[in-house]
Length: 267
Ligand SMILES: [Zn+2]
Image (cartoon, rainbow, N blue to C red; front, side, top):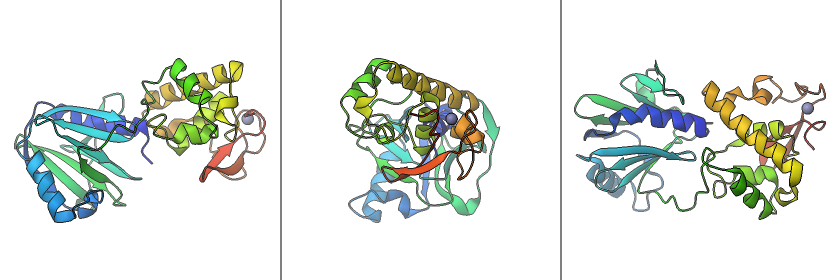
């Protein structure tokens, strides 16, 4: 599943279009508009009306939502489900801004946006879980994981009776963390995912904050959320051992999500 780092890469993919004008829109899959209240036809004409001829003034990201800002003061919000991708002119960017060739399977293209008559931004989504929404509500997002600082983090924990894993994944508190990265943060931060957030204080909080920073830097450095120690070691599998402690990794459900942790060093 794309996490903040993948969406950051998609934002980089689209950023060369800033300053360009949208000259064509091809909405190939009405399920992209499933958030529309008025039905597909009304929403599709709204999308064409808002985007057609508009200048792209900025591209940003909050959590796992990509925002394309238009000169008309409207914003196009894209989410990517489990397997969505963005490509520009046959290339995809990485989180560090470098680019690589990547072509889309024509049958999996859900949206194509032509800019300045020659450039083409494509949304490919095998599983059809991506969404497009004009002017999405962003008021419910907490600070983005990349902008979060330690004081904000301490306050969030102090005010929450949720499990720490549940708090990390709640986009209203911190935007951008999914299941894999939450497990990695807790692995690095040496905290049992089932602990109550407000009980984590003092040196435990210091270590957990270090886990947030280490994980954040690591996935950005490696350009992907599949680069954590817990994931890369193969230990996020039933019956595997902790790469640090040689004890068996436990698998539990926390807040309805499958969670892997080491019972020896995550306490
Ligand atoms: Zn361990």
